Length: 158
Image 1: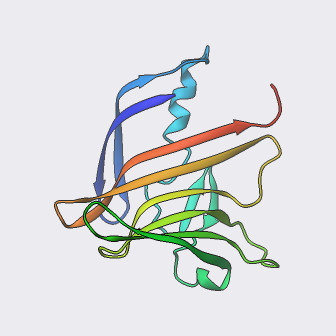
Image 2: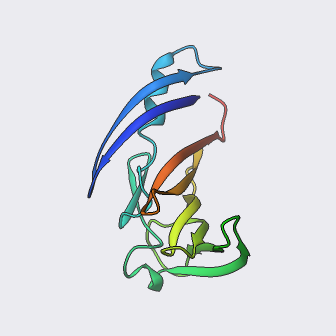
């Protein structure tokens, strides 16, 4: 499934999405296309991140540092000479909560998320969902999601 959509966002949490174009292969029922836009939260900046109607504690929310383990994996310079910090995260051992695991790419300009890849730490027996969100700085001001990717992997045949 591929989509091109126009999304309008109004601070703090209002958004509207219009599908401009879509392409589906492998599904006989095109109603599956409606599912893709409802699989993940629009922004990774909320206290909880929603994957397939389940709420996960966001590793960047206030207070999450006592529940997550973080590891600085790499740093490098971008084309604009900003520093990009690559940080992996996962729930701390012995903590019991709905958590995520993944990688954050933090840009030194505003220390904002430039890219995030995440999935549920505890996997579903039937399928898994992995998301990616890319952000760009708009008009040298706010960082805004420019690409949302969702990958669904089915573990058992239908």
